[in-house]
Structure formats: structure tokens, C-alpha cells
Amino acid sequence: MLRNKVIVVTGAGGGIGRDFALAMAARGAKVVVNDIGASVAGEGKDSSPAQKVVAEIRAKGGTAVANTDSVAEWESANRIVQCAIDNYQKIDVVVNNAGILRDRFFFNMSVEEWKAVIDVHLNGCFYVSRAAAPYFKNQNSGRYINMTSTSGLVGNFGQANYAAAKLGIAALSKSMALDMAKYKVTSNCISPFAWSRMIGTIPADTPEQQARLDKIKRMETAKIAPLAVYLASDASQEVSGQIFAVRANEIFLMSQSRPLRSVHRSEGWTPETIAEQAIPAMRAQFYALERSQDVFSWDPV
Figure 1 (cartoon, helix red, strand yellow):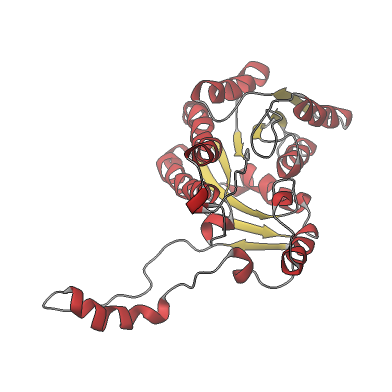
Figure 2 (figure 1 turned 180 degrees about the vertical axis):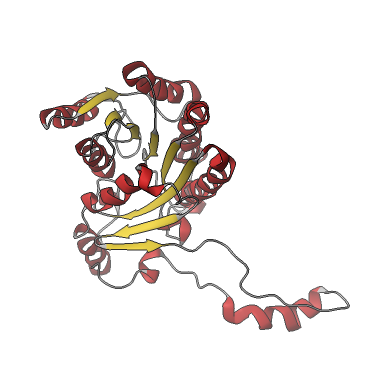
């Protein structure tokens, strides 16, 4: 399905990214396995995670090369794309999967914690995608696969930086889909539910938290890979600007912001009439302060 496609997967040294790289290589892709080998918080650097995944791919007869450049800076993000060009003379797919966590309640979050997460997730997605864009335009083809999260699409405690970045990625992905459509380039998002080392940072201090983690542990990262392989393939040419979620054996098409209800007053509105008429008329359609676990409240299938 992906024979001779050249695919960059960022954050591919472990978890979901590793499964993407392995699955894509198994389907014939030549993979640039990008990972700086940092901690979940983005600290440190180690080339061994990326090298191990490359070794796994090659041991199974696949083709891959390791790259340890950071997505969080423009110059190094360009080197990731250049790595594909230098080794395989083209680039067909970018999978923006790299990520870190610096969880803290909004009122305690430092500027550094905010910037670090935005730089890796949102800026990193833009930098790598933008670096690949001229190649996609020139060849009149290309695929962007961007990782979002229900933390941003729905909401979660203690993740203002991560949620903002992930919802920003959904908007960026849609913009890329619109701007690149005439070049036959697609851009879609995947919101994954799966146990990974990033999810492993969630506290388990109460029976409720432990029960939630036990549920998440049943969702394997490998279950996300088939959708990514499909979106990377030629078969997905007519699919662009969409947001999918994967939870074990379930695939969801997620909603995007559209008007729910309108109210009209021919003489215009005042603050008082808004309070008396507009808000009561719309209140039934208000969204509750829900988290992802409130919306996806049933056990994974």
C-alpha cells in the first residue's frame, strides 16, 4: 500500500510513533525515524530510541534511517525533511507525532512550561510541515498526518498548554488541507486513545484515577497504525481536512465547529435583552464543562 513512499515520522522512537514507523515500513515505505530521545518532559537527548526502531525495521527487511533533529526549531525541522531528501531523494508523507508534556493547572503553569509544549507540538507541526511543503507542491502530491488530542477537542484538567497546542494543530491541519488542495496534498488529524509513556504520567492517586488508567491500558498503540497507513496511501486521496479518533477497535469521525443556534432581534441587542432573551434561548445548547473521559464514558471495544 505504501511501496516506495518516503515517510517522515516524528517522535517515532517509541509508543504510537514507533508503531506508525513499523507499520508503514511493513507496507513498503522508506521511513525517516525521527526522535531526539528526550524524556516525556522533553529533557535530555539520546539517539538510541530512533536507532532501535531503525534496527527493528531493517531486521524485518524494511528500509529506514534515523534522525535526531528537534522539531521545535525551524532550522532543525528543515534538517529532518532534508534527511529524507538526502537518503531517498524525495518525501511523500509527513507524520507530525512528536510531543512532550508539562502538565500543571493553568493557574500554576509557568511561561517556560507553556512555551516548551507549544514549541514541540504546534510550532513543530508547522515547521516540519512547512519544510516539506515545497516538495509536495513541486511533485503535486503529498500527505500530512497530524496528531491532535481530545484534551484540546473536548477538554482536560491540568493541560492548558497541551490542549491549546492540540486544538491549534487541528486548525493548522485544516488550513493546510485548504491551502494545499490544488496541489493534490491532503492533511488530516488523528486523535489517539492508547497507553503510552505520555499517558503513563497521569496520576493514579485515587480509585477513580486508577480505574481510568486501567481502561486506557487496554488500548494498544498499534491499533492506531492502520488508520495512519491508510491516510498515508494513495487510497486516501479524497479524504482531507478531517479529524479522526481511534480507541481500540473504534474509529470516530470527530465534529468540527459549526453554528448550533441563533437568535435574532430586529431592533438589535442590549446587554439587558441578551441576559433576558438571548442567553435563555441558547442555554439548552451550551456545552458542559466536560473532559474527554466524560464524553467517551463507555469501555473501549
